[in-house]
Structures are given as C-alpha cells and as structure tokens.
Amino acid sequence: MNDVNEFVLEMRAITKVFPGVRALDNVSLKVKRNSVHALIGENGAGKSTLMKILSGQYSEYEGEILINGELIHFENERMALNAGIAIVSQELNLVPEMTVSENIFLGREILKKKGILSKSRQNAKTEELLADMNLNFHATDKISDLSIAQRQLVEIVKATSRDAKLVVMDEPTSALTDIEIECLFELIKKLKAQGITIIYISHKLDEIYTICDFASVLRDGKNIGDITLPNIDRSTLISMMVGRPVNDIYPPISKAQKEVILEVKDLYRKTEFEGISFKLYKGEILGISGMMGAGRSEVAKAIFGLTVPDAGTILLNGNPVVHKQTKDAIRNGIAMVTEDRASYGFVGMLSIRDNILLANCDQFSKNLVINRKASENVTVELVDKLSIKANNTSTLVGTLSGGNQQKVILAKWLARNIKILILDEPTRGIDVGAKQEIYRLIAALAKEGMGIIMISSELPEIIGLSHRTLIMADGKICGELSHEEITQEKIMDRIISKTDGGDCHEE
Image (cartoon, rainbow, N blue to C red; front, side, top):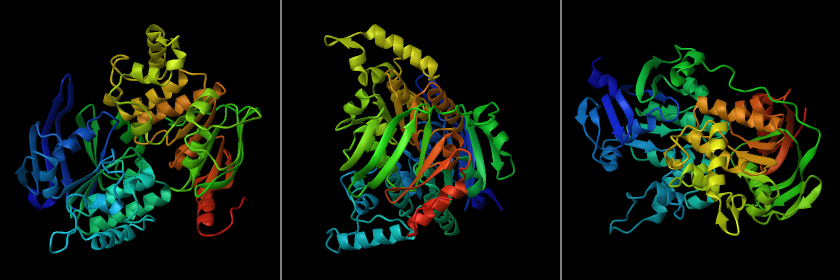
C-alpha cells in the first residue's frame, strides 16, 4: 500500500516559533486512514499548537502538510473545514445565548427554497444527531442552560455533523463520567467504521489504551516517538511523556480527624437536588462521584453561595450559617475551585500576582491602600510552595499550562485562612505529571487539617484520594463508601441501580 492511500495526514518537519519560545521543533506526524491516533504529552508539549496549525488557526510556520498525499497550506480555519478537518477544541466555542441547534448549524443553516431559515427542519436534524449519541438534551435547549459536560458533547456533535474526514478531539472526556465516555467511545467506533479518522488528544491513559490504535508522544515541542498500541507498557509511555519515571501517582493520605467542621442537613434546591445530608471532618478528603446531571456541582455551588438552597441547613463547627453570596462563604473560610477554570477561576490577561491580589484585596489593603510589597511577598511564597512554573510573578496566567493555571487558582485561596476547600474536577484537562503534583498538594492540605470536598468524574482519583466517597444520582445521595471498601464496580452499581429506577442501597 503506498503512502497516498495509507495516510490521510502527514505533517513534515513542522516548526513554530513564538517570541522567545520554540513551541514546535521539527515535528513530523503521520496518521493512518480509518484509525484513532492519540497525540499525547504534558501541557506545553506542543500538542495544541500542532493542531492549531492543522486547523488553520496558525498559518505561519515552517514545514509541510499533506492531506491524502496532496500538499496543502491552510490560511484560515474555513479552508481546513472545507478540506474535511474538524476540531473539537478543549476551549468550547459555543454561543451561550443560542440553542443547541443554532450552534451546531451556525454558518450553514438549513434554509427553505426562498432562503428563509427552516427552524423545524434544522431542529429535527439536530434531534437525529443527538439521538445518535443517546444524549438527553434537546435541539431547542439554550447552551447557557447546559452543563460543561453537555456543552462538550454539543461541540463533538457539531464537528462530526460537518461531514469531516478527519476529526481532532482535544480532551473530549475531560468533563464526562464513565458512562458518558462509553457512549463517546461507541460514537468514535461508529465514525471509524464510516471511514472517519480521529486524532485523539487526552491525558487519560486508560482511554488511550482503550480506544486508540496508534500514538505519538510530544515533549518540549519535539516528537519523542510513534507507537503502535498497545505494544508499550504504561510506565514506559509515562516516562516518554514527562522525561522521568512517575511512580505511584496517588500519595498516601493521612488519617482524618474526629472534629466535624461542616455539616449539611436536608439541603434542597428545586429541580437540582434534595435531601442532601452529610458531614465533613477536619483533615478529610470527601469525594463526590456520580454521572453528569447528578447534582454534584449544584450542591457544591449551594454550599459556596453561588446559588441559594430553597431549604435545609448548613452548619460550620456546629453553628448554622447562610451563604447568600460567595463572599459570605469566603468570610467563613470556604473556598471553591470550579470545574470551568477559564471562565470562573482566573483572569488570563492578568499576572499571577494580580490574580492572587484580585481575590484577596481585603487581605492586602488598609484604608483602601493596597500593600503591593506584601502581595508580592505572599505571591512569591505561594509560587514556590505550589511549584508554579513561570518566569516570575508578572507572568500572565493565560500563557501558563493548564496544570499551572490550576495551581494559580489554588494559590489565590491559600493566600487566605481557608478551612474548607471545594474542588470541582480539580484535574480536568491536566497532564499526568501535573496531576501528580495536584494530588500531592491536596493530600498535604488535608494533612494540615483542611477539610476538602472533591468532585470528580475520574473514578481512579476518587478511589485513590478520598477518605470517604458520597455517590450521587438524580439529585440524591444514593450511597457512601469508605476508602477501604471503595471500588469502581461498587460506585457504578449504586449509580446504575438508582438511574434505572431502583432504590439506593448499601451493602
């Protein structure tokens, strides 16, 4: 078989230089037709830059791109789309105030003969696309009313609906639960059977081994190696990615204390959750697991004051509190890292120092005058403590890797006297090396006595870090497992039994 027939894509000796940074250094990539090809590496390895060149976002570079054996240079994204290349970006590109259908067909609307929009036909076509993926939202739903996970699925539907022959999926499961991931994998298999090739970018090695045929490893802007899967063991693959061996990724967790620092009693919010009751102990990491729409994030938002519950009681150290706004929760020593860090966690155009200052003006000011020296000293200390990789405290947060951005968000809260930290998908879109650092930090904070609520769709990290795990389904807690008894099977058994209409049960 010659190369023209065998490879749908060839990228030859691609080099991309930004001011002061060589993002890609002579990178070559070959992707076989009708395959799922993984592109893996730590944040900052060059994966996204390479795909932005492929998609026409970056038109200035050195090297060559061949599609189906034909040399081509994309000047813009539309040229790439017209050539059959679709990108599902990790940064969601949806219009919040438009419907699902309007977003999917944006710029290529279904029209009547006289050029008038046919909403009925467009909505019907959208419903067909959603049904193919077994999705439980609808064509007429507004994007702003969907969860992060649902929005990500809309992006996937949007890309695959364009009759693309090569689809790039950048961290497509970062906000999905195991059952939703299974649905996505079935879709990928279906696309592959239809002759569509997938480039799959993910930090989740379980997914790479499950769904991918081949892999290319990038590190520091270079191609370290091309692999046929599964002909390489996991530890070797990780070493290729990070340039060093990574041992047990989950650190040992210290014993939780007996002091209850947070208690939630019969918390209720219409259409979101009901009957939520639990305790959080000093030094405890309390995991919350469940499917998309189970109510996990909604409960966290109610505790933190992002929303107000309709009924129920929140007690801190035995005393009832009411959090009508986030500032009430922060004043009471509660902080939250939301699942959508780009929208709610940091300001990308501000420096590390200014992001930390922005959330802590009250800590560094007196008589409305900010003590910038004190702010700088604390920032330097936190950058060192959290091993944030940046040139200095003036580095813009938007230029940092995902793992370092997450550390900046944690740093802004650690500048305060926080007693309780809520983490919603703390390692979403973060590479394996950065994950290990985040896990160590979580374990260290718990050892110091901080109470941590950790919401995660990644069952291995729930199992590896939690002292206890609450399992949620349909807005209710339907199980609780200790660290010693928790397994993926037990979690899924409780979720499925509840979503199938059964009663929540304990063993």
